[in-house]
Amino acid sequence: MMGRKRRPGVAAVGVVLLGGALSGCGLIGLPQNKSAELSEWFPVNSQVFRDGQDLPTRYGCAAYSGGQGKTPPLGWRGKPAGTRSYAIVVDDPDADNGAYVHWVIAGIGENTQDLIEGTKIDKTWVQGQNTGKKVGYEPPCPPRGEEHRYRFTIYALDDQAPFKQGATLKESLGAIAKHTVGRGRIIGNFGTE
View 1 (tube, rainbow, N blue to C red):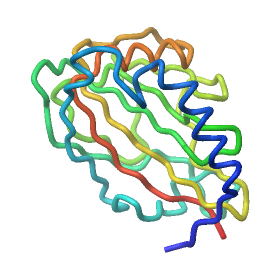
View 2: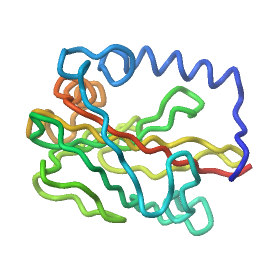
View 3: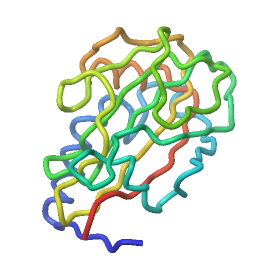
């Protein structure tokens, strides 16, 4: 496994910025409603990496040799009471300017328990904007010489699709926080020393 190489001051600032930006949405810190506060945690896994281990290069951006920018396969087991759909948020808490959200997607059917590699978006799913204000998945692409963590968080929601296609990050994360009844997470590392 690659060693971590982060700038302590930058990491501390990132935590503060993330706290300020996302705590009001309930995605970190104290939840905004009772169902989120009492939400169940369920296991998330991948066929291509273990929690806390390295993501294979093909899941990175094209700036990395072999990077194809595909979504990795994900699986989860658990359907908390009241689940009507799932949402996924992928973020990088080690980004220089605070946590960078790479993907926000919701409306994944309540009976879905996995996504395949390079998954195609179903017509019933909705995607919100990422930190770059683009709709869709943005693959891991840390600066050369850095290794970042990428958190793939699955949210069980009590709503079919709590935000509209193209919603701003604030709107989509706030809606997910409001409707969360369960969650699970797997973290993969990506980058170079």
